[in-house]
Length: 125
Image (cartoon, rainbow, N blue to C red; front, side):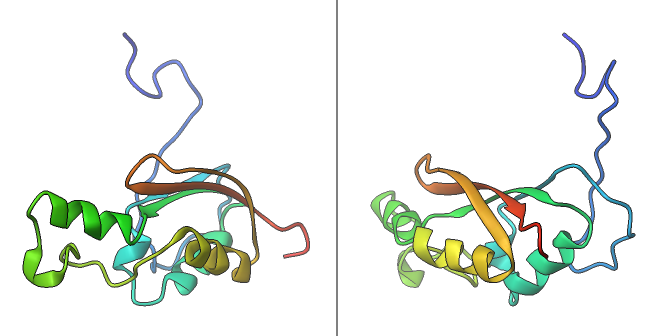
């Protein structure tokens, strides 16, 4: 089987979410399991919007994430909250963040216990 990107024009780059991002444009940015760790997730999303128009984001779905942790006996003292999770997104609150940043939510997937969102930058942004 071929390696990812082999015989393809696809290129991948890893970057810090608050870093000064080069003005180069990317076709798609995938940001998985990051925004729940951010003090200012809106700033992170807006920074990414400078370099792309399409995004896939994933975050833990609350309160299901914490309930599932408790059910498996993890993070009991923290009521199921995983260490480092600062933000706790429900479907409604995550959509609100994305829309307020100027993104159109195109579609959702909710494989337990995550929210996975495909969205696009609004054309007037």
